[in-house]
Amino acid sequence: MTALLLIRHGPTAWNEQGLIQGRSDPPLSDKGRSTVARWCLPAATDNADWIVSPLQRARQTAEILNRKVLRGGALRPEPRLVEADWGAWEGRRLAELRAEGGAQMAENEARGLDFQPPKGESPRMVQQRLAPLLSELADRRQTVVAVTHKGVIRALYALASGWDMREKPADKLQWSCAHGFELSAGGKLRISELNIPLQTENKG
Image 1 (spheres, helix red, strand yellow):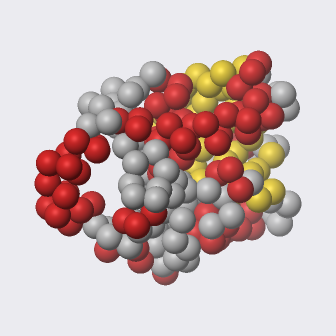
Image 2: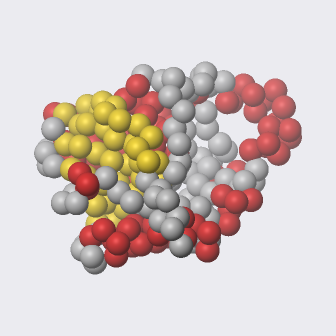
Image 3: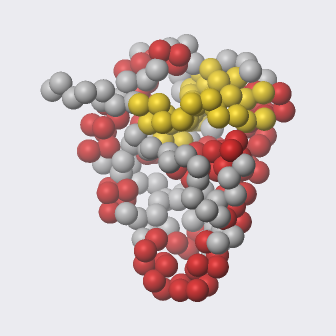
């Protein structure tokens, strides 16, 4: 059994403006850096193996945590943890796309796991590219921390819970928290604990 802890990167200026990032690569904002610097990770991660999306907002998040928790230990880039590709919609706001797309956009969103931006990637496609990674991690039988993105975490939550993304999920995922899963043989994913608090009280 492998314990998998998923952490979303800290905030960027695009997050603060409500812009879709996808494969675009903005860095952490000053607010994002200070937010991540206040995070305190569960004790179970002390001897974990760390893997990181190649996008700089995830790498920067992992590097801050690395200095704080791992004392400079190695971080392994994992391309399969990259954010979902939003294609032609990157840099746009979802509300604007809904207003422009009308019924066609609503129909696309109603497809749930098969919702797909133009020239982009559906959540089901994200699950498919992650499947080999899950199998590899299951074979390690250790604790793994993955610093990644909202779209990836939602896709894995859907895989573990059976959520088809057509309606609201049974659980509301908090993005200032970590999310714990367990991996068994063949990469079968199970939820262990969601919304594990990361932020400590600011004593500064």
